[in-house]
Length: 312
Image (cartoon, rainbow, N blue to C red; front, top):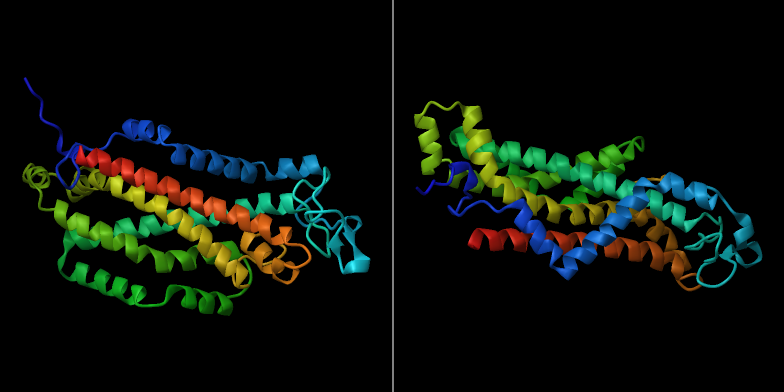
């Protein structure tokens, strides 16, 4: 006897839900996904082990090493390639001699925490408000949609700069997470609302409602599981955008402020040293580029794997 698939195991199109194990197998066979995942694992490990790295090298992210720079030449690092040596594996900053490896490691911690926190808050707001709008419809839908339209009408980056410039400097990472999330959630909420509108009138939801299922059961057992694949894809693609946003705001001087290390802040500081010490720009710029690229590639591969599963 053939057993029918449980409604919870279906997506909006009616196909069986994509297996996480199947998606993992697909990703492991994809060279781009494997390389991206390996690099991101290295960055996460570097961020977690930042105190250990500084303990091994003996140089903290804010420790000046004037012996590593030539004060007679305006603070240019001794040696080639920005002062790269056994003592400073990635060189030092001009003028003050701060160790770039230590600042990269602590900058990775700041960037990843802000991006992950903003993604989590954005996803929470987007899912809750999007499902409320799609499930209840009527005036609830109208109010939430007008708020989404209002926020999406703003040029987000310009208003982020204006808001962060007017706010106090204290606890900057928290302010960045809040401001990024305020302007980020409507995009996810619009997608969640559209899919909820499609699901709320599906046969399995109507059947559960006819059986006396509560609103909570309808939302968490029938609708939310069918949004899983879309949420995973959208959140993985949101993280690189938030990493870049944090770096851009820090580059413009309204993000993470000194002495807290940040990749965007390091790139901003390197502007005046392009000609005499290009490595000061290349190293943090390279880490930022490869991190955003790896997150984007991995998110795109996850999206493709889920799409292939839904089409199967």
